[in-house]
Length: 463
Ligand code: SAM
Ligand code: SF4
Image (cartoon, rainbow, N blue to C red; front, side):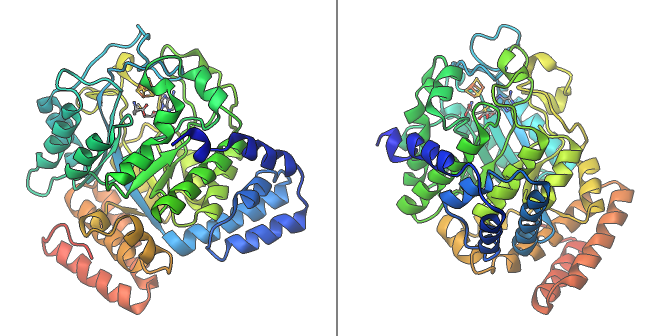
């Protein structure tokens, strides 16, 4: 397989050139089509990227909000990243972990240290973790990752347990992906960083990651290995965002055509300042806040059933604005330095990049609830085998909400009973009551029953 079979850069540049100015009626027509929840073509997306006029922008945002509300309602899935190692053999000029960076203290957590981090996350109330590592493992090689996943699942105490481990690690060989699948992960996540081949070459100067092709074909290998929940993403700021989202669409269409299902999630990180990285301080193609909102809104219109993930790289204000536009998963209470949950965020010479949101999980939860969103710790789908195509078969006719809404409410109640501060609990329970009252009869009755079970002491209640 070569690069051109997945990303056709020249075609994308031509599409952008042919769609420099679109009239109002064309944009309105595309937004009308987006409201049908069937997704958009690459040409449609290219046209939406031209929207500048403030009133048209508002129309785009209103459409995205409507789609988000229809498909995801008030749910917002919560997770925490777990950085286990900052060892790395690559030279990605934007990342503090790059091999030549002498300003970062190198560290790979051992299994005991990983268990300590997990206990802390569990005590906060987390049920979903995203394991993150640089691309160089201690002596035992890739087994280090498999052992870490095993440690995370095994580290349990009473109600405290991690029920879903997603991973964001470097591309693997097919056989390694098969091992990863066997370890019981949820999603395999990998960002192309930039889909623009020249920009890619400029910022990845050596190491395995400098091979664009090896990376762009990684998600295919993961899917061939049976990992059908995959997450893709772009590190915005390295190339023109308009090109990047067309390329994202091309990547999604490729996966859809080849495997019958697109990615489960898309991540939209923006380049953040990182120790020892000039480029991260001065991104070549900075994305301002208004364009960032457009990116989220356009993707929500273009791929309505694919989750959009926002990390703690963004400030609370930007996170709040983009929840409404389409974000469906957020990290909370994060640290990007290995050992950061036990030792604190101020071990700056080990962190990957600086965070925009420094609040604790409970503070984030209280705020999310104040905004009317239901924080969800649900891990039901993947444990019931509702992944990949099976998930999309339920999602597309709108049936997945019959599971997600009750599961969000029951896992939120679990969090409130076991981990929250009293004020958060009061706010959260009022919200749960309101949300249940608004539901249709069937999910309402189911949700009430599930909440009752949680209040009676049962845990891990999902449908
Ligand atoms: N090492 C693996 C890789 O590169 O795919 C996985 C872990 S890497 C730490 C996870 C992601 O962090 C990268 O894919 C990149 O998008 C993101 N990242 C790196 N430097 C960043 C920065 N300065 N600001 C924001 N995100 C950054
Ligand atoms: Fe290493 Fe990943 Fe950072 Fe690149 S982005 S330097 S591969 S940790």
